[in-house]
Length: 269
Image 1: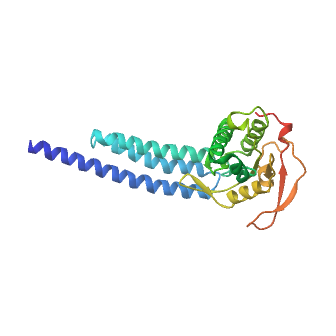
Image 2: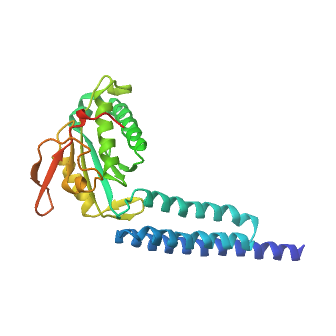
């Protein structure tokens, strides 16, 4: 009995030690992975995959080493976390290392909240959020975060971002669902493409700030894109644009040329 107790204790200690070691490896490789993403170079994807493979292979080696069945589920969970993190971040980066960001915002949201009351406002937001998420998912986009009455979105290609924006505006202008039937909303959308830094599932950097400022320049029902967004299009003439306008964006130096997308001239694809 005493021998079995010692054996079980040794296995338990080995299991805990294995989990701790793996956790340290994964945290270290995730940090390295984030640093590689920040470099935003065309060849960085291979580097990202190598960094994550180190962590995943470490998990596999520990699992094959047999420190006890109680360790297997923990290794599976941690390895899956690393793999999913790599997949999501690489997925929203273009081949050139850039990300196309879009910000959406419900116009006059404070007044709408006041008029509808909190319960009515929450119902409206639920219908609006479902509509936006559906259009983003259809273009392989990524919802970075919801900001109450708007979204921060990320796409690997500017065509996807503009396509999603067109889809959102068409869906809002067409037959309504849920609370949107009784209370239509106007949404402004701004899009910008550039390099960014990722951390804990969020994105930071000048490109993110620029996309938010572009959205602030848009009017209700408008899709506004930057010059950098248009330069990233494989076919520059794919989308019909309105007259461009120069704008100073708060907190950013210089003038920016912004272009409204004539989304009514395009059918959602």
